[in-house]
Each structure stands twice: as C-alpha cells, then as structure tokens.
Amino acid sequence: MPNLSVSLWNIYLNHPVMVAAGPPGRDGESLLACARGGAAALVTKTISINAASVPQPNMADFRTYFLNTELWSELPLEQWLETEYSKAKTAGLPMIISLGYTAADIALLAPKVRPYADAVELSTHYIRDDPRPMQDAIRAAKDSVAVPVLVKLSPFREIQRAAQAAQEANADGIVAVNSFGPALGIDIEHNGRLWMGGKGYGWISGPALKPIALCAVYDIAQTTDLPIIGVGGITRGTDVIEFLMAGASAVQVCTAAITKGPTVFGKIADEMDKWMEKHGYSCIAEIQGLALKQPAPKMEKEPVIILDNCTGCTVCVTSCVYNALFMKDAKIHLRTENCAHCGLCLSRCPTGALQMAT
Ligand SMILES: Cc1cc2nc3c(=O)[nH]c(=O)nc-3n(C[C@H](O)[C@H](O)[C@H](O)COP(=O)(O)O)c2cc1C
Image (cartoon, rainbow, N blue to C red):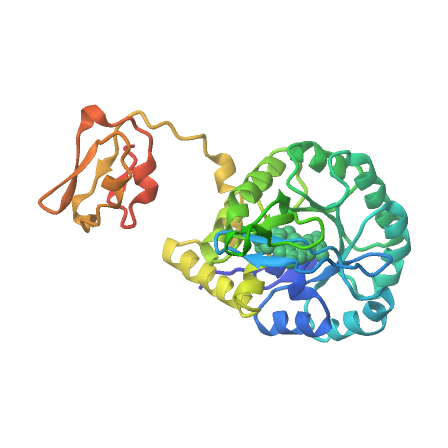
C-alpha cells in the first residue's frame, strides 16, 4: 500500500488533497461535508472585513470549464468567528483560513482567526500584477500570527516574479492558482444573454484551467524553494500526480467539489492510491518534482507502433493532419515519409499503441 501522507510546516495530511477556498467551504456545515467526503484539510472561503455582495447569477458549468463571478464570503466576519470556524474545527482536520485583501484588512483579520487557523492563506485575486500590496499583506500576516502564511496567486503572466516577491516577504508557501479571467460566456438560446451577472464577466476554473495551473506550479518550483499547493482543474487522481510531478507538495480542489459533490476528495485520493500502487510508487516524495528533472522531449523519429495494443479505433488516423497514419487489416500503419514527428497521435491513442521512439 503506498503511503500518501504529507507533512507541511508541521501540518500532517493523510493524503495531499484539500478543499480550495470557494463554495465547498462557504460555511461550517459545508466544510464538515468536505471532511466527511474525505478531504485531508479544510480551506475556508475567503473572508474580508465586510461581507461580499455577490452578483447573481455567479456560476455556470460548461463541462470542460466553469465560470464564476463570486467574490469573497457573503457571511459577516462575526458569524465566521462566532459559529462557522468552530463548527468546521469539530472535523478534527487541519484548517487553513483564507483572508483578503489589503495589508490593513489582514492586520485586522489575522489575529481574530488565529485561534482556529493551522495556517492562513492570503488571496491576491483582486491585487493584480504589482507585487507590493501582496508583500505588504504577507508582512501584516507574519506580524500578526505565528502560523504559516501562504499566499494564493492568480495566474498572472509574471508568476515567477510574484512567487519570488512572496518569498522575499517571508511567505511560508504558495498556492497556485486562482481562477483565470476575465472571461465571457454567452447563452445563444436566449438572444445572447450573458451567463454571469454583475459586469457580465466570469473567471475560468475547472479542467480548462489545469494546464495553466500546472505551468504556474512548474515555473514557481523552479524559482522558489517554498512548498507549493497546486490548484486548478483537478478532477481525478492522475491530475494530482501531474501536479506533484510539476513540483507541488499538495493540492486543492474547488470546481470538482461543486460539480461532483464533496465525496470527490476521497475519490480522488483513492484513485491516486491505486495509480501509485499500479506504478510501483510507495510515497509522495518519489513522485514530487519528477517533471522538473526531465528535459523537454525531442521527437527525432516517427512513433513506434505496437500492433498488439491497437484496437483499430481509428482515432489517430482521423486526426493525423499529415496523412501519415492509415488502416490496414484493422490495424494502424505509418507512411514514414509523411510523418512530421508532431506527436499528436501519442496523446490521441487511448491504448498506448503509439509510443515515442527511444
Ligand atoms: C465559485 C467559485 C468561488 C471561489 N471563491 C474563492 C474564494 O473565495 N477565494 C479564493 O481564494 N479562491 C476562490 N475560488 C478559486 C478556487 O479556490 C480555485 O483557485 C480555482 O477555482 C481553481 O481550482 P478548481 O479548478 O479546482 O476550481 C473560487 C472558485 C470558484 C469556482
């Protein structure tokens, strides 16, 4: 049996899959549901000094991506402090409390949430590219509490600079990434009505965000030695393996816990466990950062065909834009002279019948 446990800043997790700040952690009751659903740690919905007034509608699911225009928590600070945090704490899991946004807000909020927090996570969603407000917020948190201070980055283009700035300000870890936007969704069945309320824009999360989030984790891992918690588009165990290989120490899940319900945390951890067992990995440390050690591949030769694996499904033939693959006797064959070594068929084949030549 592989050991999925992770220890981060003296916080013990029995596997790396936590809740991400958002609706799954919108109050104490929802956080308890995430704990019952198998989450290894709880992250609470971002609070700020004042309760948010959230546009409606604010969420829409398009399967490969999800749009939201939620802000921070609509519950008042007093309700969190009097009821919600202590209710969530009864789960007995590590709890990371998300706070926003300015240094002044954090200086006021951090000491108040301290009794419930195993760590605090600072949201930078509305701070944008200039790293100084983020650094001030980190310093305000460090001055107020002794627990680890994590900073959650939006997928800026300058993510390495942001991560370095966070490290300079003494953050203890990075959470990457928040949802990406602005983005737009149009309902063509209702005369072009926008899907999101407020200003009409939304932010992308869910599967479409995963490659952006993975790239952020991979880039940050190469610029800082801070622990990184990966978040963005995780729906299954193999997604977590990718984040760990990119350099993450743990992960968070938001959208999949909305669309599939809070039992998704335990399911993802089970899938990881099975994948690790099948591939002979015994612990998380054996997987973490593997992609960082790999040079980018060079495809100097055409793919190798393993005929025994070919089911004749023709998926590769249909998408071979160079007309290099064709069917013969219900199996794939290759016109070597047409092959452009683009590699697409390697990812399209569902049965591993096409492999990169070594
Ligand atoms: C409806 C919704 C509300 C969210 N609210 C917050 C929030 O309050 N604070 C925060 O830091 N991130 C918030 N997020 C961002 C998520 O925590 C997460 O970073 C992002 O959605 C990517 O992960 P996912 O693809 O697993 O959802 C929210 C996301 C969604 C979809």
